[in-house]
Amino acid sequence: MSSNYLIIDVNVKTGIKDNFVKFDNRQIILGVKSLPLNNRANLEVINMISKLFHVDISNVKIIQGTSNNSKMIKIIDPEYIPEEFL
Image (spheres, helix red, strand yellow):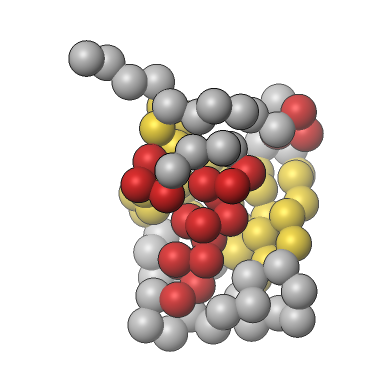
């Protein structure tokens, strides 16, 4: 069984007042309320990406950058790709 996947670059701003999503070329900029403590910000990023690409959270993996603001994320079998990202 082969799966389709998408690898995206995400830049994360943590500890902000309101969550946001912005698109800049083929990079996504996410603002999350959580601080990068106890993996909370990463979990919030995964949750936001799963909603954005209409996939289960188990299909979103941070493959690089778990401890910094610049992340590489793998999305397995995305059901939707935002038009702004294309």
